[in-house]
Length: 512
Image (cartoon, rainbow, N blue to C red; front, side, top):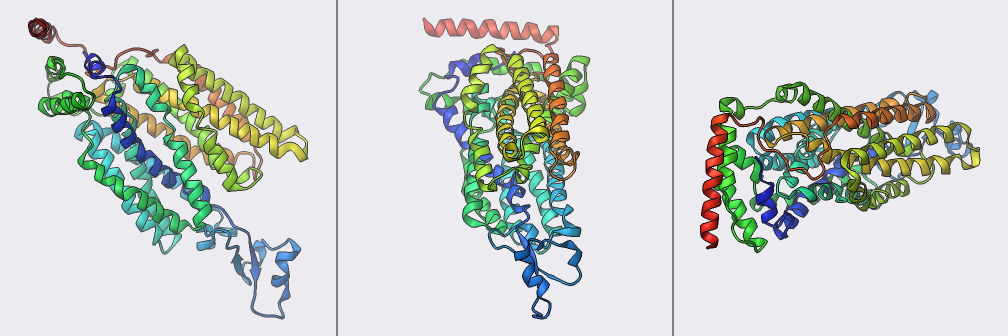
């Protein structure tokens, strides 16, 4: 029992869904600068030792001699940082014995995102998609303001942990919030919308313009503030309202959808059928938990595989993204190129989806593995004068392919679960991705300082295993989303059949 027919009757992806999808999608644009802030804020600017004592000329000559970044002078020199960019590294002198802090902040932030995703999964299914989504946005707005006024790197790290949780609340809810208003064939299209790369472009331009981590946080807060007022216009997920028995609220949303899409008000008897089916589950249906993802062998298999796919995608994606500082060339230009390579993902996603979700995902993973092995080979055997170009080309190509694969995998994994536990499953998958984000930095350090061969061999092996695991999931292309957890009982089925017959009879009478 599902709402696909009713949504298709309302236009599938009409004016109402277009406006709502764009409105909700804007949130990802403001999440990106927060999520990837350390790509710039964690950069170590040029620095050198200086002294006001004219007799100690070694510090004054250090910049010219090329030996200016000398940690052995820790006790006797004042560090002077280049003002080309003000980062948290230059703000709190996070070099030499504190050089580990920048990467630690990234990992701790990802732990916050992981916690946020776990909270989102439970709360969004229990209290509604809208409440969790906008709570995350409010948290994001306030956290960016507080971050800008951090007085130490410890305070900054704590605030970024809470910002990570806010990102987790939003990312753990957004996609499902969007697709629960549209018809079957539009779910992949929504996943392919270039909201994330657009956010990366905005972050890159802001960083190039502002050059200061504090102003970056305040600019992100300013972009978020007006969006908070969309709370008064955005509806709750119609699917969530139905399975929670709030039928009048669901009919109100459907009525508005029909009016804006210029469609007649459809027969809503299916709402009673779904509510009856969920009610038959009793009190247990009102408080699903993560344990329900492992309730049967089939559910457990889907949960484990989908979480592993997200983990593999995340490790590769963030290893390349946060490894930008190890690529040759200007970091701003590299970041911009990274963002631009994701824009062509939309037509590619729609193309590979024609061949089925699983085949598309597996193909992208295998191609990513080939690129990772190619990058490892380039780092090892490419001529020194061409090595940087080969590595950059492989990195940009790999990031594009894994982005396409991840977005199709997002749809494939979300479609494995019914509405009542879909946000729990989506949050579990997001949690897998956050674990991947935490591991990404550790994998990059496998080969030592700026040695990319070993890390990318590991990434290639990981994503190859993910390609094989993809075929453990059910092919969902063209299939309707299920709304309830289990099949109806015999009694409920009979009631449902009678209600359907009655609704069909009334519909025929109205046509006459």
